Image (cartoon, rainbow over all chains, first blue to last red; front, top):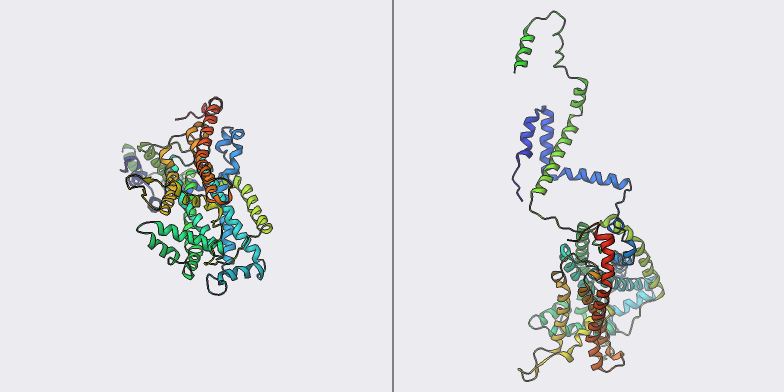
Length: 264
Length: 257
C-alpha cells in the first residue's frame, strides 16, 4: 500500500486553484491541519450513524437477513453467556467489596481471625449471610458461565481466523477466573481451604527449578500460615481484580471491533 | 484575456449613460453569489471532506490489503439487547439462589487432622483429576523401570498440556466452516473434550464413585473417544440433509469461499 501523496489529493494545490478569499483560505488551512491529525471526517460519520440510530432503523442481524432463525434460535441463549458472566463478575465485585469491610485475613486467634470474621459476617452482620451467599453464588455462576461460553465459542467456530488472539485471551481469562475462585476458596480458612492450599503448595513444589520459588511467592513459604492467607487475600482483592477487569475490557473491546461471529 | 482587455478599455472610457458610478453589472455579485459567499465556509468544508473521503477510498482500493470475509454483526445494539433479557434473568436467579441456599462453612482449618475427602471447588475437579493420573505415568524400561518424572510433576504437566491443546485449536482448524455439521471432525473433538472434562472430574472424586480404579481409569479415556465417534457418525449422517438445505436457502445468497 502506497502512502505517497497523489496529485489528486494535493490539498494545497487544490486550495490555490480554488482562488479563495483570505478568510476561506485560513479556515480551510486550519481545517485541513486539524483533520490530518484528528480525523474530523470520521466524526461526521458518527453523526450519520447517530442519525440512523435515532430513527430506530435497526439493521437486520445476519441471522434475520438470511432467514436462519428457525435454524439457530437454539443457539441464542448460549450467545448471552459472555455478557452474563460480566454481570455475575460485577455482582461478585460489589458484594466482595462490601465483604472486604468485615473480613480480616489473619490466622491469629482461635481458631483463626479469618474464620471468626466469616462467622461474624454470617451471624452478627445485618444481611451478612446474604452478602456472603451472594458473593459465593455469583462466583459459581460466573465460573460456570465462562466455561459454557468457551464451549459455545468452540462449537460455533467463533474462534476462527481473525479471532484467534481473542481465543487465547479468553483462555488466559478463564485461567485467571479459576485462580480468582481458588484464592477466594482459601480465604475462609476452613478445613477445605487449608487442604486445598496444601495441594496448591505441593503442586508448585513438584515443578522443577522454579517450583520452590513459586511456592514462596504465591503461598509465602512451604508451610501454610499467616503469610499464605495474606497473599491469597491480596491476590484476590487487589491484583486479580485489576488484571481481570483490564483483560475483560480488552476482550470485549476486540469483540466490539470484530463483531459477533454467528454460525453461518 | 481579450475579454479583460475589452473590459479595461471600456472602463477607461467616459460613459454618459449613467453606468460606471456603481460597479459594472458583470462585477456585481448576484444574489446567488452573495448567498454562496455567505455559506462558503460550510460548502468549502463539505468539499474538503468529500475529497478526504475519496482519498481514503482510493487508498483503500489501491492497497494490496485483502479485505477478508469477516462475518460479524454489531455488539451494540443487537447482541447486547438480545442478551440483556436472558442475562438479567439469570442475574435475578443469582439473587434468588443466594437467598435460598446459603453456602456451607465447614470446620475451621486444622493442620493436624487430614479430612477424608480433600476437594477443591467443583470447577477445579478437572484439574484435580489430572493430578490423579499417576497410574498412567509411564515407567521407562530404559531407566530400569523408574518413572521419568515424579507423579506430581506429571499431573502439573498434564494441566499444562490440556490448556495448551485448547490454546492451539484456532491455529489448527482454519477455514470458513462454522457449524458442527460442516466440520464433523472438530465437533467430535469438542464433544470428546467436554466428555473428558467430566470423566476426569469423576476421577478427582474417585473415593465417592463405587467402581474399581482400573475400570474408572479406562472409562475416563474410553468414554470421550466413544462419544467423539458417535458425534462424528451422527454429524456425517446429518450432513447431506443440512447441505441440501444450506444450498437451497443460504449459499445461493452468499456463496462460500
